[in-house]
Structure formats: structure tokens, C-alpha cells
Length: 364
DNA sequence: AATCCGGGGCC
DNA sequence: GGCCCAGGATT
Image 1 (cartoon, rainbow, N blue to C red):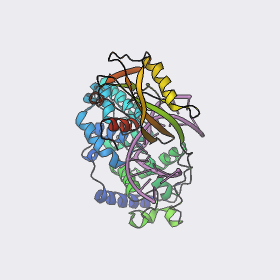
Image 2 (image 1 turned 90 degrees about the vertical axis):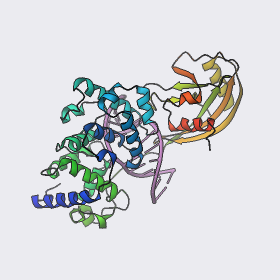
Image 3 (image 1 turned 45 degrees about the vertical axis):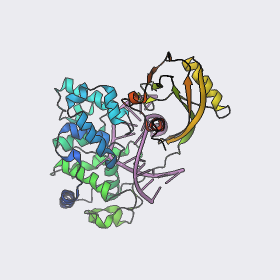
């Protein structure tokens, strides 16, 4: 792959890239220092998530959980709440699990050893390489989407970057490039280049500090790379959710299971509905089975459309009232009667935040 | 190796 | 509506 590169090429490439990075890098909160904990948190937040989205979450998270110890000792509910709206919620549950391990086994110090660090929950090849190189200056490759895009063009690598195996091709090419440079600067420079210049659509080759080294550019193929297979379209699912209100102004909420979609997030009672049958009747049955108590004034009040990557929820929201103040909760699962104010302490997926907002009169 | 797991912003 | 994003765990 790199047979065309002699050591002088490598040096010139490194110098031009690092020179560019030193003047063009964005000022980001996790670049203030090389605190391994801060770098780690930022890298987990940045998984499949854009920098602009992460910044406010990162600042808030650091305010609430400034150190390994703080996060290790925090209540899970509070941690999940700090992640509310970011998505991929297992990231933060895995992060807290791993941080507890660091707190207990390593005296609160992030191990400066790729093998040990990689063994922690939620730390894969990318995150390990990123934290080890950025925080500890270890010459580890950190191959993410940016790196694969930049190097697929640079070296004209035509493997499908959607395949799991392809990452290894890039990891194999990188060690040469990591010689005799500060690993933290080099890895971040490649990612910054991918984010700012060597972008997915219409790459800014004319502004690129290493355009003269780019094999794809020489062959006029920069628009064709990287190769990535297309994904299937999302499937729609009809749902009904119930805003069930008791006479004393509390609402029934449910916590989702420990595994699967939106694990451990809170929500209004809801279920998938069949299109062949009357949805209002299905809601009636659902309430009866779960509450076992008569509900009155059942009526549709809102329609929520929510798209995930691979799934679309079309939720019709119903309001209903229980007759008695002496309300019970269903046998199975975790349920809670709360006022809307109390519910604010818990983490809800965006789809159900839309319902909450409507109920608070912030709707539309 | 393929699938699951969120949400937002861009075209 | 499709695509992409500083990916990892599970099957």
C-alpha cells in the first residue's frame, strides 16, 4: 500500500499535515489539556456523533462529573439524564461501568496500556487508540470514519469501509505514519482534516495541505472514495402511547427494559398497534390489562413521528383519566406515578420528550 | 459477518 | 428521503 512512499515522503507529509493542524485546529473543550478522563469522555460522546452536538453535552457532563471518582459514585439515573438526547444510551452505561472499574482496580487512574484500557466496557479499537495516543502520546492508530475516508483517498484503498474487516487494513498502514511525530497531534490532525477538508461530499482538495500526496486526487477519483455499500431503508411501525392522568394530577410512566432499544429510558405507557383493528379499542384493552382500572375520557390528542436509523415510530398519543386517586401500578416491569415536574429528573428518549413538551404546554 | 443501537443536520 | 457522523456490543 505504502510502497510508493519513501521516508522523505512520509516526513514531508507529516510536516505539512502537522503544520496545517497547528494553525487550523478548532478550539474544543476536550483539547484544553490531556486529562485522560476528559479525553475518554469526549471520545465516547463523539462516537457516531458530530462535534457541534457534543460540545454542550461535554461541558455539562464535566460540570456534573468532573472526575473518575465523581462518575464512579454517581447515581445511574443522573448519569443517564446527562446523556438524554445524545442517543446510543448504552455508551454512557458502559462508560460508567468502565469508570467504576478504573476507580476500583486502578486507583482512579486510566491505565496507560492499550491492552488494559481496551478490556474496559465500551472501549473498542478506535476509542482505545484515540485515548492512548491523545492522552498518553502512545503511537497507537485511531481509525474512525474520518481516518478511513482520508486514507482511502490518500492511498487509493478501494475496500468497502462498511465492512468490519476493513478497519484492519488502515490500522496496518498507519504505524509508519506515526513514527517520529507526536501521536496526539498526528491522529487528531488526520481527523480534523477529515472533518474540515477531506469531507464526504465535495472534498476541498484545493485547500488540502497534503493534496500533492493524494493518490485518489492524482487519478481523479477523490469523489469516488471511500467505497461504502448502501443501507436498507427504515421500517415504519404504528404505535399508541397513553398519557394517563390521575385525579390528583400525576401521570403513569414506565422504565424500559435493561437491554435493547432505549434501554432503561423512561416513557409514557405505549404499545405497537395493528392497523387492521381500531386503535382506540386497542388502547382501551391496553389500559385495562395494565392498570386493571377503569379509565375515562380516552381521546387522541397528538401525533408524533420519530425516525431512528433503522426504524420509524408513528405514535398516536391518547389522553385518559383514571377514576380513582388510589391508583396502582402494573405487576411486571418498573412503573411510577409522577407529576410532570418529578418526571424531569428522569431521562426520556426524544420521541417521548415530544409528548412531555406537549403536556407541559410547550408543545408545537 | 451482519445486525442492533439514537439523533441531528445536510443535501 | 438518503447519507453521514471522533463506533461498540451482540449474535
